[in-house]
Every structure is written in C-alpha cells, then in structure tokens.
Image 1 (cartoon, helix red, strand yellow):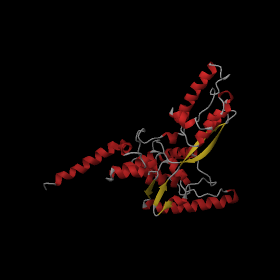
Image 2 (cartoon, one colour):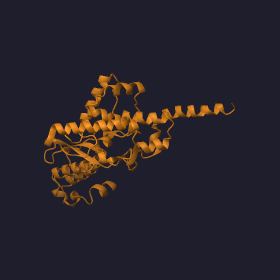
Image 3 (cartoon, one colour):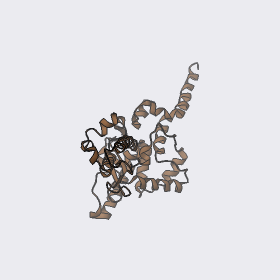
Image 4 (cartoon, helix red, strand yellow):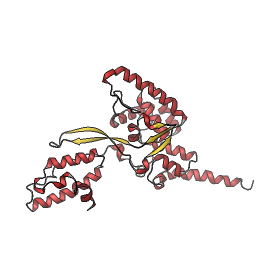
Length: 300
C-alpha cells in the first residue's frame, strides 16, 4: 500500500489507462525516479509491485503483454551503497597516512580531495558536491551530495548514458557543519592557485562554476575517475588497497583515540544516531581502558 501511495497513485503513470501503459513509459518513470535520487532498492520494490500487477493483468486479458518485462533498473554507485553501520571498519595507520601524503603531488587535485576527506571525515559524495561558499568562518557546511546515475534509454534499454546528480544528503543529520583544522588552510590556498591555473589554461573552454573541487574542465569530478586515481595512488605509495571511505573511518578513529566524546564524533560524521557511531566499539574499548587507569592515582 505504501509503495502504491508513494510511487503510483498520483504520478503520471497512475493516470494512464492500464491497457495503454507501454514499456517505454515505465522505463522513463524509473529513470526519472533514479534522477530524483531514489535508490536501486526503492525502484526495485516498485518494479516488483508493478510486475506482479501487470502479470495478473496479462493473465486476465486486460493487457496483451506485461510492460514490465525487459526493463532495466540502475544500480547504485558503489560509494553510495556504503553505510558506516554496515561496513567493516577499515582504517589507515599513521605510517600509511604518511606514505599516502608523501606521494600526493601539489599539482594534482586528488591531493586536496584526500587531505580534506582525511581531516574532515566527509563522505565522498558530499566532498564532490561542495561549493566554495560552503566554507565560512573555518567551518564547512554540508547540505548536499553528488552521485553518478546510469540512465537507460526510454525506448531502448540496451542503451544507457551517465548523469551526475546533486541531491539531498544521506540523512537529516547529514546536514551539518564541520570545523576545518588549521592544517587544511594552506592546502585550500594552494588548491585555489591550481584551479586558477587550470582555468587560465583552458580559457573559454572552462566551465564556470563555484565548486570547491572541480575537474580540470570545471565540471563535477566523476566518482569512477576519482576511484581510479585513488587506487593508483595507494599502489604508488605501497599501501594496501582500501576504499576511499577508509579515510572517513580513519578520521573517526583518530578522534576517539584523542578522547573525543561519542556524541561529538556522531555529529561530526552526520550519523543518524549514536548507535551507528558504535561501529567503532573496538576503539572505544581501548579508550575506556585508558580512562579507567586514572583511578590508580586516587590513593597516591
């Protein structure tokens, strides 16, 4: 009932007579939902409902053929699927971080993306969606995310194109402000110079934008290109391959190791609840043991 109410009842598809609904109309609707930021699982649940309905309609003679057959549903981008609470916590050691940073060129955009991720804990999609105006008074405001969406052709679902979409962040608590540590301030100034150089080099071919991390041509950076650059960097630095998301886990782990409260860490990460932040229990246990040691001094 909820799926019907949310996705069928008042949409254009719901206003068309059952016998007149064609395969292309449903494919177009799925594409529109994906463009709006709906997940693979949400659209799949809708598809199951429609397929069951039209299967019955075909069997009963209301339609000649089930229009849901052969439709394609775009899967979510790998980084969009990552939920902190569902993922194994992978972090980098201090030695690994040094290796990574030492292999970052000041003339490469990935340097500044990685440094920002490591020292703010921001998700990849949130990083790539940032505008320059999102940084004010030594804090960064997160209120959006960006994802690459595969859109199938409405009339030929063997053909597909890719679009970059800016959507609302993952959860309500993902809307947040995160302090920018001093170490990032000179990095941001160097980033400005790099972008100005790229803009000058391309001239009129450069796409004017307000992005904090634009591509060399001034557009949004594609997540797949970033992933390839990230993997090449780890290989060059001689560091074991881990997801880009490991930078976020490393940020949280370092905060806990410095006795930051779980509530503060939860808010900085934009978790929906403290329960999600409890994935770092292995770190919390170590911190608790260290804290309790202070009791040894009570009778001294």
